[in-house]
Image (cartoon, rainbow, N blue to C red; front, side, top):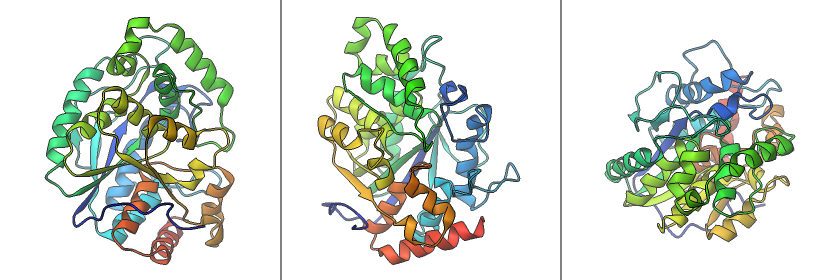
Length: 336
């Protein structure tokens, strides 16, 4: 298998890497998200991932960046790529419960609500506008922007947004066993309460059923002047679904083969329906001799914190697959 499917029709002289951080209370529903040791602690995950990607260590808590099975978190992969490429990561706070301990841009949002109890993102229109302003700022940082996300519970909100937009979406999960029936039940309950007029306005859909990351990312896509690549799986497909509904230019998406090969999701079909170009990175984690990384091949974690996009960026910058794999292996060894 090639390291990267497809040949990007662009190069870059000055790439930038950015992660949008956000919370949704959907992640606190037991069984929905594996991005934390407990449902409540999933709300801390974006903060801890930002610390790791920015500094190389988790500074707020005495934790190793591994799942209970020893699988390295995606943030360790992203950190490895920042070290390899020398690119300094940037973070955007779309709406977090806890204060960040690293420098960031603030989109002035709030924590996303459980869409079963009311509007999920009351400030959706405002966040889209702030995303547009951030896109203008980011336009001065380089010629390629790889834009990732860290939103525990975000595949469930992505499912709701994509279905509300009319796509027959099936979304991935950080769990080996995707909690499909639970996600479907939430989606049915949420969509049943949407007024027909709401379905005509993509930003109103986000207000009702989305999460804070989606309008910020869509706003950035509207105004960023260079080449934009979204880093993620089904959550970034939801962003592209919104961009298309707003009649914007669709960016490409970069993610891992572990998301593509998830049989409980339909990533490739969704990309074709929306009209998105997808790049898939195959880092061959099962062949590196690290039991934790091999868990990605069995369906654990799969993607997150822009990991697939970070590897994609390194490849576009000219780093070879052996260099990328060796750096990831050595980095995760430090956290074992």
